[in-house]
Amino acid sequence: MIVKDKGVEQLIWQWLEQVVIGLNLCPFANKPHRNKQIAVWVSDAHKATNLLSDLAKAFTHLDETEAHQLDTILFVTPKMLADFYDFNDALDWADALIEEQGWYGVYQIASFHPDYQFADTEPEDAENLTNRAPFPVFHLIREESMNRALDSYPDHALIPERNIARVTALSDTERRQLFSYLFKD
Image (cartoon, rainbow, N blue to C red):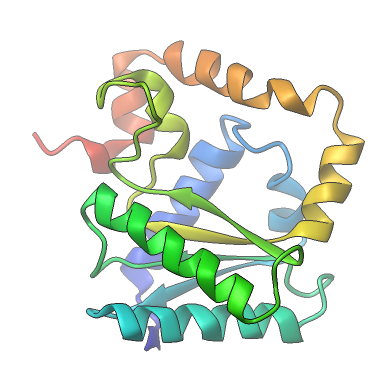
Protein backbone atom coordinates (compact mmCIF):
# COMPACT_ATOMS: atom_id res chain seq x y z
CA MET A 1 0.00 0.00 0.00
CA ILE A 2 1.22 3.51 -0.79
CA VAL A 3 1.36 5.54 2.42
CA LYS A 4 2.10 9.06 3.56
CA ASP A 5 5.21 8.80 5.71
CA LYS A 6 6.39 12.33 6.40
CA GLY A 7 9.68 11.17 7.93
CA VAL A 8 10.65 9.01 4.95
CA GLU A 9 9.45 11.63 2.46
CA GLN A 10 11.41 14.37 4.23
CA LEU A 11 14.63 12.34 4.11
CA ILE A 12 14.12 11.60 0.41
CA TRP A 13 13.46 15.27 -0.43
CA GLN A 14 16.50 16.29 1.62
CA TRP A 15 18.66 13.73 -0.21
CA LEU A 16 17.31 14.89 -3.59
CA GLU A 17 17.89 18.56 -2.84
CA GLN A 18 21.22 18.36 -1.02
CA VAL A 19 22.92 15.41 -2.71
CA VAL A 20 21.40 14.78 -6.14
CA ILE A 21 20.73 18.43 -7.02
CA GLY A 22 23.11 20.09 -4.56
CA LEU A 23 26.13 18.16 -5.81
CA ASN A 24 24.73 18.23 -9.36
CA LEU A 25 24.98 14.43 -9.58
CA CYS A 26 22.01 14.50 -11.93
CA PRO A 27 22.07 17.66 -14.01
CA PHE A 28 18.55 16.82 -15.20
CA ALA A 29 16.89 16.82 -11.76
CA ASN A 30 16.77 20.52 -11.01
CA LYS A 31 14.23 21.53 -13.67
CA PRO A 32 11.52 18.97 -12.79
CA HIS A 33 12.15 19.68 -9.10
CA ARG A 34 11.76 23.41 -9.65
CA ASN A 35 8.60 22.75 -11.69
CA LYS A 36 7.18 20.43 -9.01
CA GLN A 37 7.06 17.49 -11.45
CA ILE A 38 8.62 14.98 -9.04
CA ALA A 39 6.59 12.84 -6.66
CA VAL A 40 7.75 10.68 -3.78
CA TRP A 41 5.71 7.50 -3.26
CA VAL A 42 6.34 5.40 -0.16
CA SER A 43 5.36 1.73 -0.18
CA ASP A 44 4.80 0.00 3.14
CA ALA A 45 5.04 -3.42 1.47
CA HIS A 46 6.58 -6.32 3.40
CA LYS A 47 6.18 -8.92 0.62
CA ALA A 48 7.25 -9.03 -3.02
CA THR A 49 3.69 -9.31 -4.34
CA ASN A 50 2.61 -6.19 -2.46
CA LEU A 51 5.72 -4.33 -3.59
CA LEU A 52 5.05 -5.20 -7.24
CA SER A 53 1.43 -4.15 -6.88
CA ASP A 54 2.48 -0.78 -5.44
CA LEU A 55 5.11 -0.36 -8.13
CA ALA A 56 2.52 -1.11 -10.82
CA LYS A 57 0.25 1.56 -9.28
CA ALA A 58 3.08 4.08 -9.40
CA PHE A 59 3.88 3.31 -13.04
CA THR A 60 0.17 3.42 -13.94
CA HIS A 61 -0.20 6.80 -12.24
CA LEU A 62 2.82 8.09 -14.15
CA ASP A 63 1.39 6.66 -17.36
CA GLU A 64 -1.99 8.34 -16.80
CA THR A 65 -0.53 11.74 -15.87
CA GLU A 66 0.81 14.26 -18.35
CA ALA A 67 4.57 14.83 -18.15
CA HIS A 68 4.12 18.58 -17.57
CA GLN A 69 2.29 17.65 -14.34
CA LEU A 70 4.39 14.67 -13.25
CA ASP A 71 7.67 13.81 -14.90
CA THR A 72 9.10 11.25 -12.50
CA ILE A 73 8.41 9.28 -9.32
CA LEU A 74 10.83 8.36 -6.57
CA PHE A 75 9.35 5.06 -5.35
CA VAL A 76 10.68 4.29 -1.87
CA THR A 77 10.61 0.95 -0.03
CA PRO A 78 11.67 1.63 3.58
CA LYS A 79 10.33 -1.68 4.95
CA MET A 80 11.78 -4.00 2.31
CA LEU A 81 14.96 -4.66 0.40
CA ALA A 82 17.43 -3.47 3.03
CA ASP A 83 19.87 -6.02 1.62
CA PHE A 84 21.46 -4.62 -1.53
CA TYR A 85 21.47 -8.02 -3.27
CA ASP A 86 17.74 -8.45 -2.59
CA PHE A 87 17.24 -4.97 -4.00
CA ASN A 88 19.10 -5.95 -7.18
CA ASP A 89 16.82 -8.98 -7.52
CA ALA A 90 13.81 -6.69 -7.13
CA LEU A 91 15.11 -4.55 -9.99
CA ASP A 92 14.72 -7.62 -12.19
CA TRP A 93 11.09 -7.93 -11.03
CA ALA A 94 10.54 -4.25 -11.83
CA ASP A 95 12.05 -4.64 -15.29
CA ALA A 96 9.79 -7.66 -15.88
CA LEU A 97 6.80 -5.52 -14.86
CA ILE A 98 7.80 -2.88 -17.41
CA GLU A 99 8.06 -5.53 -20.10
CA GLU A 100 4.80 -7.24 -19.10
CA GLN A 101 2.84 -3.97 -19.18
CA GLY A 102 4.21 -2.92 -22.56
CA TRP A 103 6.15 -0.02 -21.05
CA TYR A 104 9.53 -1.06 -22.43
CA GLY A 105 10.93 1.99 -24.22
CA VAL A 106 8.47 4.24 -22.38
CA TYR A 107 9.85 4.03 -18.83
CA GLN A 108 13.08 3.03 -17.19
CA ILE A 109 14.33 2.71 -13.64
CA ALA A 110 17.36 4.23 -11.99
CA SER A 111 18.28 2.66 -8.67
CA PHE A 112 19.51 4.02 -5.36
CA HIS A 113 20.19 2.21 -2.10
CA PRO A 114 21.94 2.91 1.23
CA ASP A 115 24.45 0.15 0.43
CA TYR A 116 24.70 0.72 -3.32
CA GLN A 117 27.85 -0.80 -4.75
CA PHE A 118 28.99 -0.65 -8.34
CA ALA A 119 30.56 -3.73 -9.87
CA ASP A 120 34.32 -3.93 -9.35
CA THR A 121 34.28 -1.58 -6.36
CA GLU A 122 34.74 -2.10 -2.64
CA PRO A 123 31.82 -1.16 -0.35
CA GLU A 124 33.71 1.81 1.10
CA ASP A 125 34.75 3.26 -2.29
CA ALA A 126 33.60 6.87 -2.59
CA GLU A 127 32.14 6.39 -6.07
CA ASN A 128 29.33 4.30 -4.56
CA LEU A 129 28.06 7.48 -2.87
CA THR A 130 26.69 8.66 -6.22
CA ASN A 131 23.86 6.10 -5.90
CA ARG A 132 23.43 5.93 -2.14
CA ALA A 133 20.12 7.12 -0.73
CA PRO A 134 18.53 6.94 2.74
CA PHE A 135 16.27 4.04 1.64
CA PRO A 136 15.94 1.73 -1.35
CA VAL A 137 14.60 3.89 -4.20
CA PHE A 138 13.32 2.96 -7.63
CA HIS A 139 13.46 6.14 -9.71
CA LEU A 140 10.73 5.81 -12.35
CA ILE A 141 11.79 7.81 -15.39
CA ARG A 142 10.02 8.70 -18.61
CA GLU A 143 12.39 7.72 -21.41
CA GLU A 144 11.16 10.58 -23.60
CA SER A 145 12.10 13.11 -20.91
CA MET A 146 15.46 11.43 -20.36
CA ASN A 147 16.26 11.40 -24.08
CA ARG A 148 15.33 15.07 -24.39
CA ALA A 149 17.55 15.94 -21.42
CA LEU A 150 20.46 13.91 -22.78
CA ASP A 151 20.16 15.55 -26.19
CA SER A 152 20.41 19.00 -24.64
CA TYR A 153 23.32 18.22 -22.32
CA PRO A 154 26.84 18.39 -23.74
CA ASP A 155 29.15 15.48 -22.96
CA HIS A 156 26.50 13.55 -21.02
CA ALA A 157 28.67 10.43 -21.26
CA LEU A 158 31.10 12.13 -18.86
CA ILE A 159 28.50 12.57 -16.10
CA PRO A 160 29.46 9.38 -14.17
CA GLU A 161 33.16 10.28 -14.26
CA ARG A 162 32.42 13.84 -13.12
CA ASN A 163 30.17 12.54 -10.33
CA ILE A 164 32.86 10.18 -9.05
CA ALA A 165 35.35 13.05 -8.96
CA ARG A 166 32.79 15.21 -7.13
CA VAL A 167 32.01 12.73 -4.34
CA THR A 168 35.64 11.64 -4.03
CA ALA A 169 36.62 15.26 -3.40
CA LEU A 170 34.21 15.61 -0.46
CA SER A 171 35.82 16.00 2.94
CA ASP A 172 34.88 13.59 5.74
CA THR A 173 32.82 16.37 7.32
CA GLU A 174 30.94 16.98 4.06
CA ARG A 175 30.30 13.26 3.64
CA ARG A 176 28.96 12.99 7.17
CA GLN A 177 26.69 15.98 6.62
CA LEU A 178 25.36 14.99 3.20
CA PHE A 179 25.17 11.24 3.87
CA SER A 180 24.33 11.27 7.58
CA TYR A 181 22.04 8.26 7.08
CA LEU A 182 25.09 6.14 6.25
CA PHE A 183 26.92 6.91 9.49
CA LYS A 184 25.51 5.14 12.52
CA ASP A 185 28.10 6.11 15.15
